[in-house]
Length: 150
Image (cartoon, rainbow, N blue to C red; front, side, top):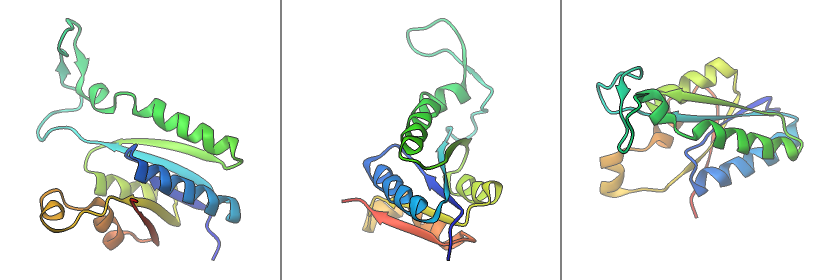
């Protein structure tokens, strides 16, 4: 099977960096492009366009801007490194529920493979915080290759 578009959800962890490196190798082997996606979440009920005055400032900033922070720059840096390695790469920055946004980005980008890291939580930690990776694996319409954190 040939992969054309590989989606890599990225939370800026070392685990996600390992998944990106694996996706790079798969993309090179298949001539595929990579889409790096980061999903930022806002506290429940906070509108993305709500104005907030950050501590130590008098200038209001939209909640969306605080939530995404430097994420776009970080994604752009990762994409630039992939391009330096000879892989076509683009980025997507989403706001909302991580699982929903990853699944919708699969469809939006026409991804035929997802490569993502998993932090390997188990027991109570998994029950409390859930597993984005597990939910994506269960609901994804395309294959998901997971890489466990070392």
